[in-house]
Amino acid sequence: MLFSLSETLSFYASASSAIFPRINIRDPYKRLGISREASEDEIQAARNFLVQKYAGHKPSIDAIESAHDKIIMQKFYERKNPKIDVKKRVREVRQSRVVQAVLSRFQTPSTKIIIKTSIAFVVLGVLTILFPTEEGPTLQVAISLIATMYFIHERLKSKIRAFLYGAGAFIFSWLLGTFLMVALIPPIPILKGLRSFEVTTSLITYLLLWVSSTYLK
Image (cartoon, rainbow, N blue to C red; front, side):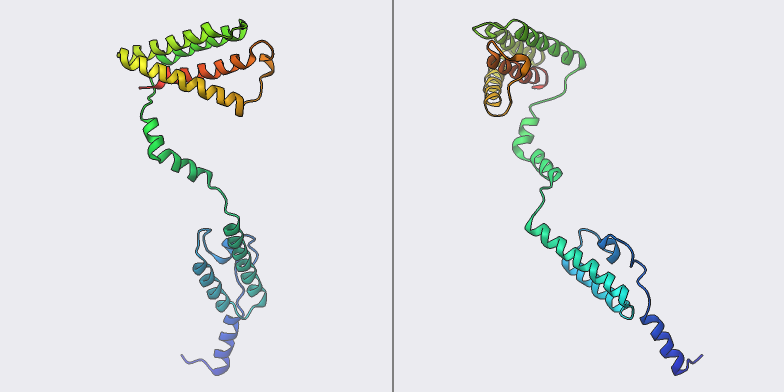
């Protein structure tokens, strides 16, 4: 069946004045029909295709151009002010060799062991808070070292490893606790007064020693 010239022209005229179906969508990416990870070439290709398809309808062209401009400006802003992908950074840190090496030295023990070590270090913490002395919590700190070595030996059945791990964990914990107190952690109101610095440092040390006593392998 043949179309007349007028019918053919009418057909192309109606096609060229087609209305963009996503003209009222607010999201510029959805309006252009592209993903947020689209490259600049993909953005430009989508814009060119839609402009050609809906060239006869000015509101459609305006909507397409507006979405294109918003995306381009957003991409430019992101390049000038890159955001820190926290999840990606955390994943990269966890997958690093150093972190993997450290994590490989720890394992989750039985619930019985966790409860036992928790009770021991909680008691030490309570005694340190309730009975501070002018000399500081020297006795409690010494007991925490002995407790650490005991719990590690109980799990690993090695006196040498218990001594080395216990002494190393104690030195590291005390140094880190002192650093945190000086650099990061503000004074705790409930511990104001007699030897509060040593008391708070001891509590941080107990926490780190509890981790070593419970999870170190």
